[in-house]
Amino acid sequence: MADKFDVIVIGAGPGGYVAAIRAAQLGLKTACVEKWVNKEGKTVHGGTCLNVGCIPSKALLETSHKFVEARDHYDEIGIEVGELTPNIAKMLEFKEKVIAKNVGGISALFKANGVTALEGTGKVISSKQVEVTGHDGEKATYDADNIVIASGSVPVEIPPTPLTDNLIVDSSGALEFTEVPKRLGVIGAGVIGLELGSVWSRLGSEVTMLEAMDTFLPVVDQAVAKETLKLLKKQGLDIKLGARVTGSEVKGNEVVVKYTDSKGEQEVTFDKLIVCVGRRPYTQGVLGDDVGVKLDERGFIFVDDHCRTSVPGVYAIGDCVRGLMLAHKASEEGVMVADIIAGHKAEMNYDAIPSVIYTAPEVAWVGMTEEEAKSAGIEVKTGSFPFSANGRALANNAPDGLAKIVADAETDRILGVHIVSQHAGELIAQGVIAMEFGSSAEDLALTCYAHPSTSEAIHEAALAVDGHAIHMANRKKRK
Image (spheres, rainbow, N blue to C red):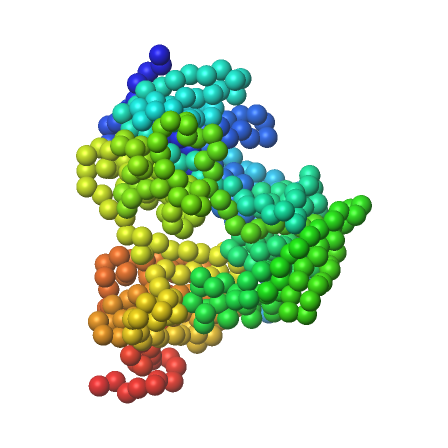
C-alpha cells in the first residue's frame, strides 16, 4: 500500500493544480494525479488550458494581432514598415516556448509547496481510495481522507463532421496548422470559434463561420453582441447565423460541407475545417462503478454550492461540474474546496465570474445582461459609453467598442458590466470588483479615474446610468 494523503487531486489543470497547491499551503499532505503527456512523452501539468487551450491560443492571438497591426495600421500613426510576411513556423515555436514556461512553472510550484506529483490516470475506486494507472500500465492504490476530482472537459464532436488527421480538426488541431489555409471553415461562432477564426483570418485565411443559432453570442448583452458582430464582419469574418451543418465529405485535400439556412440547402468547400461546437465534461474512467458519485442528466458531476459531491469526502470542481467552463472559475473552486477541507469557512460568488472573448477588440462581461435582468422581472437602468469618445482609446488608435453598465433601477446596485474594446479582458476586473463589493453605479460614478486611461469609459458608463456622462450628450440634467 502506498502512502496515505490528506488530499488527492485528480487532474492538474487550472482547477486541480491550484487546489493541490492551496491544500499543501494549508498544511495538508497532498498529491495530484496527471495523465497528460506532451509531444516528447513527458508528463506535464496545466491540462487543456496551458497545453492546448487558453495559453497557446492567446500566444497565437497576440502574434497574429501584432502582425495585422504592423501590416494594416502602423502607417496610420506614422510608422512605415514595408511589406510583411507571417512566419508560421516561428509563431508556433513561440507558442511552444510559452507553453513550456507555464507548465514548467507548475512543476516548480508543486516542488516548492510539497505537492506529490503522481503520473498516470487517476480513478476514484472508493470514497477514500484512488487508483493510479501509470503510463506503463502498472496500477497503484493510494488512500486519502479527501478526494478532489478536477478532470476537466473535452471538445464536443458532431456526427456530420467526424474529425480527420489534418483536414477536419477540433480546437487543439487548429493550433497546429503549419501553413495558412486559403479557405477555412469554422463550425460554431462561440468563444473558441471566434478566437481561432480570428487568428487565421488575420494571417490570411478566408474564414467562413457556420453558427446554428440565429442569434450572435446570445449569452452576451445584445448591445455589445451587435457591436461585436459589426466589427468582426468588418475585419473579414464571414459569420453565417442560422446555418445548421448536415454533413461533410473529404475530397482529396478539401472538405465539402453541407448546411441548411433560411435559403435552404447550401454547400461550401474548405481547405481546413475547425469544429468548435462546445465542450463536454470528461468523466470517462474517472469514477469506479460502486463509488456512488452522482452525475446529472448532461454528464456533469453533481455538486452543491461548495463543490461537494453526493459522496462525503469527495469533491469535484471546474469543467466537470455545473457552471461556466472557465479556467479561473475552476481555480477559485479549487481554492474554496481546499479551504473547506482544511476546516476553514469558504464561499464563492458565482454571480461575479468574468467571461472574456480574446478577439480584437476583446469582449468581456460579468453579471447579468440587460435581457437577463428584464426576463427575471427586474426593472433596470443602463448606461453606455463609446470608446470613440475616450481620449486614451483615440491615442491608442483603438476607438472601437463600448462599455455598458446594467443597474437595478430601484437600488442602483450594479447587476452587470459589459465591454467590447481593446483590452476589455483587463478592464472587466473593475466590474468584477465592484460587484463583489455590492457597489452601486453611483459608487463608480463618484470614483476618481486616472486620465487619460481607457478605464475612464467605465466611469463614464456609470455616470451615464443616471444621464450624467460628461463626454457625450446627456439625456438628463444633473439635479
